[in-house]
Length: 246
Image (tube, rainbow, N blue to C red; front, side, top):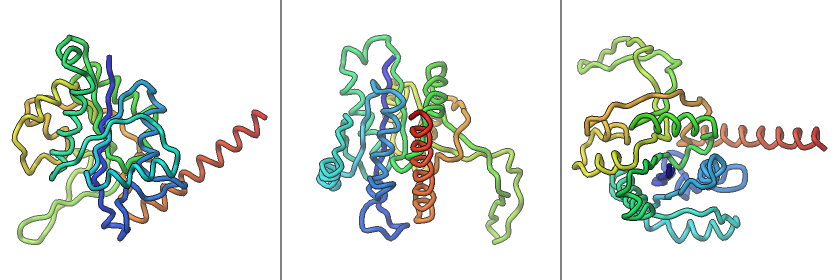
């Protein structure tokens, strides 16, 4: 079974008032995006990675790769107007990587779609997502809500909601590659907020697996500060482990 991952990097960094797109901001000394790609490669070195970037950012990405000696293999597709268009371009690249003969055969292929600025995705979460997707068609990792939830009313009021009836959605969302490709042939709609919503519109049932609370999407400076703290802790832990073995 072939495994693919589409890493969608379309952030602008506006929420951080950054001069560069957020996926290129440094995390523990190198761009966030590199950590994310390395996480998937660490899970499965044979997994084929497709990075979706705005075409205008390609030269800068190449420059960063040279600067950091980043040689991890990955194909590149260009982003589109909407996230929907970017993922569709990534799926087209997946189809090209599979080749006409492989795509027409019965061998199942799985494809994950993941936010570039979620660098803390780990092996356990990836294994849960891919393993479940091998059994079903569409898998989404979720986390329970821990804060109270209120619904806004048109008259300006609000009402409490039972938070146990809702969950927080993460990525990677993992799918049967053929099913997702067919689903993305549908016309774009404003309510296509993620890949699961596209699959749901095509008539597929979405299966849920446990996410991971540390699998945050870095969108603000506070998120980046927390991510740097976690990376610092990870580095210190590796040093302790090496000292104990030595």
